[in-house]
Image 1 (tube, rainbow, N blue to C red):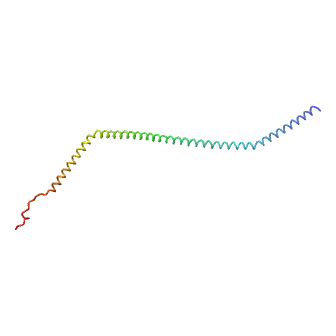
Image 2: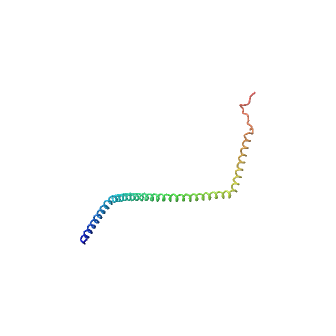
Image 3: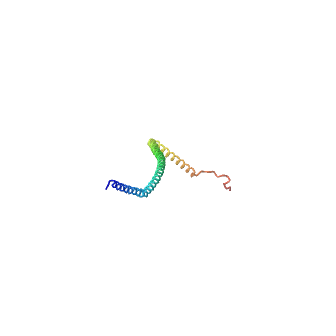
Length: 158
């Protein structure tokens, strides 16, 4: 066989291989079309989910900031309340100290004035005895018969 024949046979084999390759590529492209649509749909779905997550993250961030401000306001109010409670406690302690001081002062005056109290009791007892004596004398005088002269009109004439 001559070399031209071999050349034609090689050319036919090459063309057959080329046609098979082209058919393979076409089948590959046609076969890839459907999975590519699914991948594109999945990518779009993933993008929508990412957008929803981003929106929800922004919403959560907004709520977190509101909660933070609310907690800060309540914390300030609690701080004011605690300070007021401390002030009230200090006022109660001061009031208690004042009451103790006053009662201690009164107790010391009572102890100091026991002599005066004894004198007041003696004078009171003396005054009561004096008033009782006066009352008794008045009763005695009112019970004593007094002589009264009979009037002339009351006497019988004989």
